[in-house]
Length: 245
Image (tube, rainbow, N blue to C red; front, side):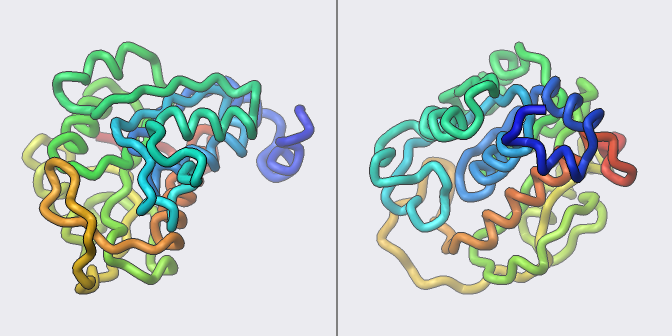
């Protein structure tokens, strides 16, 4: 065992660490949630990571995104994240994809073989296509639901989509997945009702009506919970097996 991961091995055991080293995990969406998830996966010994995001680092990302530094403003998030993770774990095989996952890029993304997929995508249509495709192909997947306009990280949890409540995004995703014959799907969500936020000066990105307010601790905590589910699932921990379709 390489020294950087020795304390993780002390907790999970050598067989689990070998499984992690031989695993390929994709993280789609590298913002306040997905970026911290990707870093946790890297720091936990996952041997191969695909990092996908079409966006670039902006100054407004500095309050919460791990790849957002003054030196990376203007850089593509996929490449900024890969550069940061490469400095943490040089032996981790990193693939950066500067793309927006959607029907048109589906086959490009799924050309690789993944052992687990993390969905930290914001746009509902893209999120649904990714979830449906992963379920159809038998690839374990977990999704992050809404963290914007929320302040209490203690309410976040790993759950089945059928158990979600209070989260507007969860309600939409749950309804649309049922239409697609997917009643069960693993998610990280919070039942905290979104707060009314003050208007900001930032223009919403394409496909979004508004920019949600966000501090660091809620999206970061959600990202770490996503990583927990993936790591313990790949390690074979009881209770963390992928949710059946």
